[in-house]
Image (cartoon, rainbow, N blue to C red; front, side, top):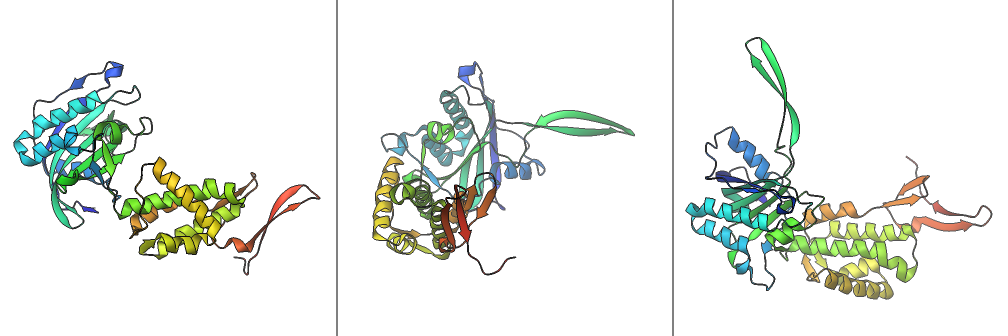
Length: 347
């Protein structure tokens, strides 16, 4: 992951990017910000860099698979090659964002372009270009004092711990489209930041392989296994639990080992492989049979593996163990389904 403690923000340019569909303008600044003093610098570092907490790396791409034709790739390369071109290319980035703001739901905002050095990426020191868009401001109270008088006023500003949209492009692996990280907390403009503006694709590393396979397993347990084998909800949850346990207990992933330990029977393995092929093709993912398991990806993906059995509005049963200790039946006398739970001790 990245280490920001020794990083230094050398240059920052700010522009305001409106939405042309809403008759909003693009406002360009004349020069980079001045006076990044000792008080401002740590605040900017927190705002710009502290939200990149997941080692989910991307790289630039383009429709014909030639990333050198990606405009942002060109602007960033120019900055890395000649720091004197920083502000000029920050304007190019702002214009490119404005041109790609095509949906009326995309909010206007302040665009910060930063040149940062001495960020450690997996232990390697690198310089970086940061692109950050602030779309939301929060109200706050400001208390001023004049001698023995106090004045309370309302104002609004940026929460430095909440970055709306961001991209860190490291001067690493330029020949492969650079190495970069993303933040996008928008809920209304879908994949605009990643796809329309930046045009990036995930790096096929251990994080994405782990993430993709866990997504596949979650979808299979939620959608396909019940269709193919008419299993109960408790058995679906049991499959999810065994999948998570597998990823948490292994360092290296082997699909053959996963299929044997988690799926077990040949018919379920065949069903899973068929579903997996369609899943990978439909999502344009590159499958991998063996890879190093990413601990960070396991922690992140495990959150979507729900182990709660919801029974009408009366009961929620948290299942953490084997489904062999749960028995499902139907009581014809009262006309209702039931679950019978077996256990040794009550706590």
